[in-house]
Image 1 (spheres, one colour):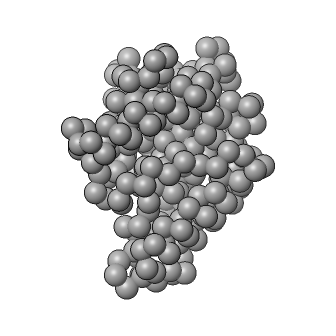
Image 2 (cartoon, rainbow, N blue to C red):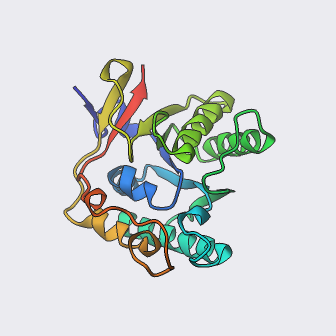
Length: 223
């Protein structure tokens, strides 16, 4: 049975969301963002990659696409939290080319994330699940656990799924958010036009069935 984010001990924690790409924040933890922002417990949102891999050579120029996806992310977050808040942080990794844990770039990002958690008094990091098949999603999880080991404060890591099934129940504790208002997550997702339409040429399109999202999020904490 899952616990509720609004119950003890979860309701006092400050959350940081780590998303591999702009749009994963809405697909994976839109309800978490909305609930914690409403309670004053959202410390911030961090994006791992620049999102430039979603369109091929025939699409928009890479730098233009990077700028577009940053603007889309900020707009989606505004729709989730309903107010202007702290600008998201972009770590700027190349899309679909994650750094290995032993690479300097990985360690530099882990230290930056750990320092951010210290500065913003973060208690918990929500990140895509380690068993997600996309390389950037798994890399984000490895980065969160590395930052957890480096942080000079108690830091919990909670995994969420975007493309994968829920993890094995025996290995995790599940935590559920409250339900979002109808349509709020869909409204936020529509901010990511580059991922939903042909506005920037041939490239990735989020499948229609994936745009039908739950009104709650479930997060998984390793036992």
